[in-house]
Amino acid sequence: MASHIQSRTPPRAEAQPRAISRWLLAVAALVFLMVVVGGITRLTESGLSMTRWEPVSGAIPPLNEAQWQAEFDQYRASPEYQKVNSGMSLAQFKDIFFWEYVHRLLGRVIGLAFALPLLWFAWRRAIPSGYGWRLTGLLALGGLQGAIGWWMVASGLVDRPEVSHIRLAVHLLTALLIFAGLVWIALDLARLARDPGARHARMPTLAIWTLSLLALQLLFGAYVAGLDAGYAFASWPLMGDELFPSGAPMLEPLLVNFVDNPIVVQFVHRWLAFVVAAAVLLLAAAAWNRRLHLAASAMVAAVTVQIALGIATLLSGVSIWIAVSHQGMAVLLLAAILYAAHRLGAPRR
Image (spheres, rainbow, N blue to C red):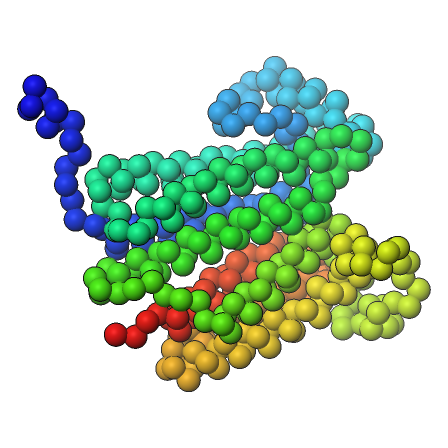
């Protein structure tokens, strides 16, 4: 009996911070890919092509003509088909179905890529002390993100064939919060692998301000995408012939314009970018003074490329691939800031 119980006891193992750190960075790379595919899904207006949320059975796409026709019939009953895409062919439907399907499939892959190794590391007792609850919290946040995704899609399946730009913003910012959590914990664990006595890094005050401004800019970026505000004016630095178009229609009350008015949202997104850039440069200077030259250079390069891509997106009339690159670069900028903040906030021995 004792030998039977002993056979069920998980083998003891040393904590494996390095292996867990690499796993978390791999999952973060998948989240980055997810954000990019999400951008393509939005820009190709594919997000409402799948009208049901089937977390398990939905992983299998239509496999024959009859199944494709049944899926298409579901879509034809939706407001988007009836009000926007009436007359769409089955072949055209397959094109938009593809991106939404890939987006949802990636979500499932990320869930498994996080949950299964987490269970393995937990069973092996390889998770360092103090990290179990942090990893479990990320798992819970990932599950919530799946529900938020459907909550967003559902807003476009009743009456108006458009997803709520507010729900879109919640969906994007939650994805980036998960990405940030993965990167930060991975950096903590990588440091722990190098120095078993290392303590958690603390977020410097300047980095908190920089990330807060970036979060606000990302919020307005999501509003721009959700409201199709990028199409409002395809010129830069002026909007038409003025810094701000004097004849632009305004909503009441005034504050609503910062959420629902495409022209105001595009204006704020244009110029808030330079406020974010100023904060990034201050953080880069702090890193440079601490001889963190790689971290400082990465931030400056990332914010420069990001602003250039934003301007190019406007001037191109929102070219899909430039706009997607702009969204992907935002994630890389976030990663660069997190890396610098972690290096600055790591306690010195």
